[in-house]
Amino acid sequence: MTSGELHDLFLSTLVREAGGTRRHWRLVVGDVKLYPVETHPHCNWTVTPSGSAAATGEVERIADMLRARHPIVRN
Image 1 (cartoon, rainbow, N blue to C red):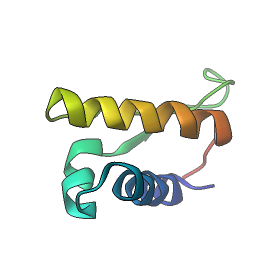
Image 2 (spheres, helix red, strand yellow; image 1 turned 90 degrees about the vertical axis):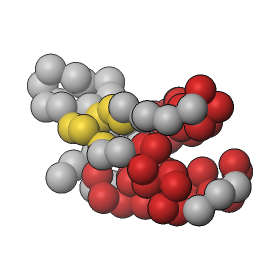
Image 3 (cartoon, one colour; image 1 turned 30 degrees about the horizontal axis):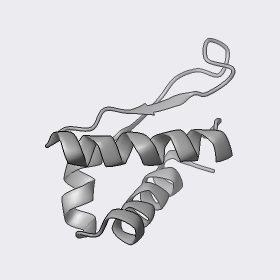
């Protein structure tokens, strides 16, 4: 999976599970940041959500679920 595919999966999952629009969630999620697998062998990506506590909580909940399914992504 690529970081772009992961970002799309984030948005689709958030719209389906939390409601709202892809545009709203794109602004809340921000970019998917990748780290080298050599220094982060268990999970090489992160997101830094911004927005309300409820919105960032939803993003963190989905991030935990996606980390379990897709811990390593590529550019």
